[in-house]
Length: 128
Image (tube, rainbow, N blue to C red):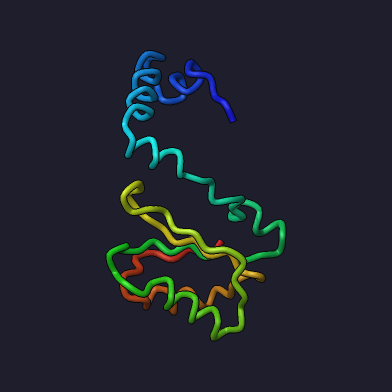
């Protein structure tokens, strides 16, 4: 998809020349060019339409430095025989409050909130 420099500059709140300069810098640096050229979209995220599809959503805000949060959350769901459709995590380097979002085959019982809360590193649980 091509995006005009003016549109990108407007969205970023900068002058068009900043966009042109930044793109030139990226293209002229072998490592940066390789990095940016290798980024691929993750696919369609189902969070906003999960309810319409009859799926469940649990969102865990957590300390990303703590290990095993994903494995503990998936084990909890597996123990309740709830299948997982999708999992994605917001990168802690890019987001102030990183979250782990799990989309499940069916709605998640509210009673699981307390069990998700007991996972080491989890600071907030939302079932949507």
